[in-house]
Image (cartoon, rainbow, N blue to C red; front, side):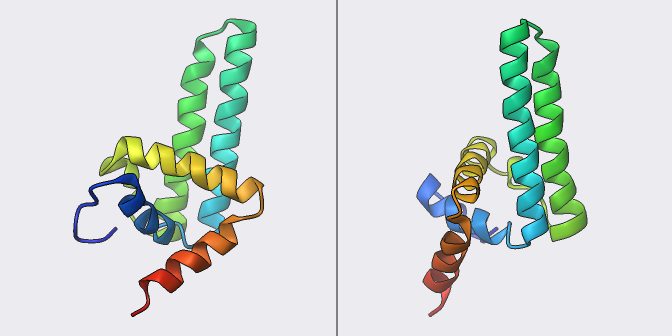
Length: 113
């Protein structure tokens, strides 16, 4: 994450993308987020609130494994929880639609002098 604290989500997003530069880390995030969505839906359909806990655990556990053991950086959740969640949903959307690679390229080109 950049030294200056971002003042908006649009300022936060490029540093989030850079913090997720390793493809395995991004895959772990997408699987965790997808599983969380499935568990939330099952919890609503089956009226089982315990699925909410499963959604939280699966989403965060896989993401944090990606950061600590693959990317070797600290999850943005600790610095900006809401923006981190929003960015995770955006990354999930871009990934499942095949647009994340282009976004990574755009962010890296924008950073070059």
